[in-house]
Length: 344
Image 1 (cartoon, rainbow, N blue to C red):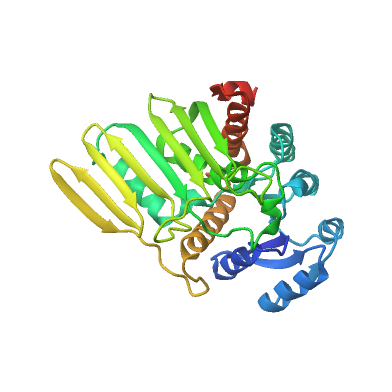
Image 2: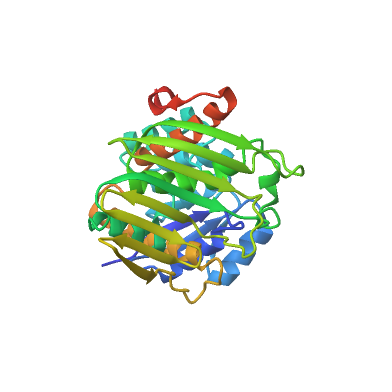
């Protein structure tokens, strides 16, 4: 079966991970890259042997010759690029967050639907091996019916050195990191109906919030707590691990620092090391994130070939993005916000 051909738009900080993932993927390869910065374009092109290089997305799409596009640019450019891809009939992956506003996000989903092209958001945290292990343990019935959970990402890691633009936006941790944790909560506990959120800025050198706590009401009566911080100084830095607690009618589950999964049920505790493998191009502590990039990209290939909607499709991701919007609204107005209010 012939490999799917892809193009990558955006050769910045995170895109190198995607290029490594595509190079190792089964059934797809990148044939063209695009970036407005000629130096970044050359660096990525030389590193991965890509000859077709563009500084203009319009020129890239005009030349064509690829089956899908992977958009790895900053959020302000997403709508224009996704709609451009839809006009050219090209299946599209878009980096998170999907868009600056819910209006933009809905327009992007609609454009792809009208053009009949697949659309996936690169929401990779739910593809991390430890998160998948938590889901598998719950689905096995080991802890019974889940009624409460917590998704936690607390760190003092300096994310601004590699991505300095994160320090300048009025919205920071919920939009950049919390969106991942909120999507994990949806993946594990089901869609949410309402959120109550509180935020705080601890670091005076940044513009946005660096601490957020969100209480979610889920379909089926589950309550979850999603908490994120880049202002938490711990004796052993856990970055970039997501920790979890889940309580069920027959037992409990804990995913703790160091990728330790403990499932307690019927008076016994099963301990498992769920640390992800370090791929040949990966480097700790990033190997957890890097493996999830490769896994979600492989999922995209399989979904595109089978003609089925990917798990983190644009349509599905509207529910995750709605949690982001509802969290900011709740924190600003000091009230519980229903997802229906945000989704419209």
